[in-house]
Length: 319
Image (cartoon, rainbow, N blue to C red):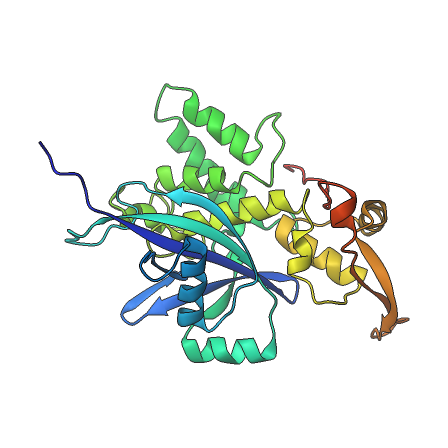
């Protein structure tokens, strides 16, 4: 009888903040490894009663960052997900988490000393950022390469997945299908991780599609973005990324940064008013070249008034 495989539980955190209307992802590095990684470490039940406690300890030790909002995403256990040359160690099953935080000057200084750094989230998933219009990368590289891959088989499953994930033909482009899009690129051998894992010998395109990450950390990052895009529609988690006081323009910029597309200003103001998620502070913020902007704060009473308070911003079109 074959002995059961040795299993190790790892914990990964996709930690998100907003800076200059850009979603930032916290990454760490190691000497001799040029690839970015999410903060990660093993779960040690002898030291920590829960996995969340263990993750918070790991993140603080690696980055000097104390996490606030955190939620479990998914368990990643595919064979080969943590592959290393000549690796005979235990199979690593990772539990992914999404964490939201705010940037501050003192925290940035501690992060710099730890070696951790903030990177543009869309640097890893550039096809997800539609704020300046439809990404040229889609029609120039991604869709032709995926269409060619889908046509290599007579089975219709690849073509169906492609239409659903990227909003082709009569299907709408769904911003929440982040993971489905990344997994298609991985299976088709269009991202560097497919080479790292031995799925293909070399990438099927000479164009680098976003920054690669260590192991399957980019898949975890894609899962986190999908969860956050969904979550802001029915829970007020967007305010975990906002300062205590903010303008409606700053709030709109943060929503657009996560949703990955532009939102019409007047429609957004009506949406915020209707959701009753914010209240004026009575203070204003000086604006360059215009009148001062009113400051608002999150109206916490909404959590007691209805079960699903969020900002249901409209989706983008495929064109």
